[in-house]
Length: 144
Image (cartoon, rainbow, N blue to C red; front, side, top):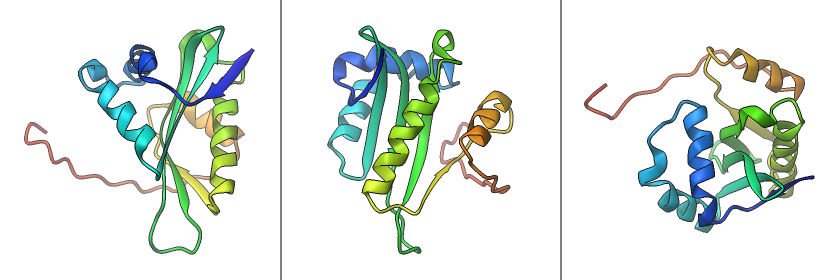
């Protein structure tokens, strides 16, 4: 049975592996520090899906915002291990995120999902997310 819970630092290797599968390699060097920061920050939430002691999914969330009366919960990362996909784990993580958002008084949840992630788009559409077609970013890394 899959349980949704707050992670601990011992979950760092599994979370790092999930982020690698999502296209973010190389987090091993700093993931424990990031997990500790997110756990301690009142405007962040980090949850893991655990099946028989194994972390099989992760969701990272952030709020608040400035211009609207209600807060916006932003999904920064959501990933389910490839072997656990199709079992409802992503929907369970997203359902917990929505519950946290409602408890916090949020009036929406937002996320960015790269256009190449077509499977993820189908998932989010099933979860009743609507498209907002423009996303811009500016790299602060001199290498880019």
